[in-house]
Structure formats: C-alpha cells, structure tokens
Length: 175
Image (cartoon, rainbow, N blue to C red; front, side, top):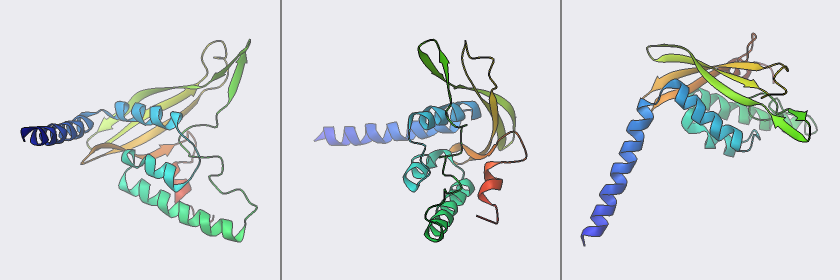
C-alpha cells in the first residue's frame, strides 16, 4: 500500500532534481552535452532529428527549424531531383572528414570553451580539430550563442566564423 506512493514520490523527486540541475548547468556544460548527443546520433535534417534536439533549442530557433522543414517540403515538391538547402545534414558541426594516420582513420574532436556570459546571454566556442598526428590540418571554430530560459541555457544561434550564422540561414528570403 505504501510502495506505490513511495515510488511516485521518488520519481517526482528525481524529475524535479533533474530540472533543478539543468537550470544550474553552465553554458559550456550545455553545449558539451549537446555535442555529445549530436555527434552520436543521425545528422539527417528531418523533423525527428530536430525534435530529438529540441530540449537544447530556444523557442525561436526551434520555430525557425520547423519553418525550414515546411520550406524544404514545398521546395522538393517543385524540384524533386535537387539537393535541399540542408541536404548535408544538421548544421551544428562541419562535415565529417577523416585523416589517415597509418592504418587508423581519425575524426575531428570538439573542444568547448566559454567566450562570454552577461545576464541572460552567453556564447561559447566549439573548435573542431583533428588529434595528433593530423593536428596540422585546419581547425574549424563555431561560436554558439545561448539564451537563458526558464529551463536553463538554450542554444539560440551558431556563428560559423564568417558573415553566416544559423539564424541568418534559416531566415533567408530565397530557398
């Protein structure tokens, strides 16, 4: 008789604790957790994969992704043989390249560092680089913009190191 209540209370406590821990997570911890997930899962640009990452996105970024999916569907109806804008996959990391070192194929790793934090805005850098012995090849650095929401820090934009950013791409006029 008491076990169902105990299990219910224990489950409720665990859920509330996870929410509190997520609110205390730093921007760097959020981006590290995001990339740990992102790099281990499919990069196909589709609703399922966007929804799987939704917990890390600001409401605006998620809305822009949903709009992009609608635009892509309409574009592919008119141009079924064309490659869609995000045809190379989700836009959070460079295209996966490898480097041969003897018999091994090495992939880029990601290093995340804080850039700034002020009020409800923060930025961290994510640098994608090959490990030794391929370290002399170019590294790619993205700046991840975050906003603080009720659930903690959320990814709001990705700056690709030039004039482009994820939000600019998603808000473009022409498909």
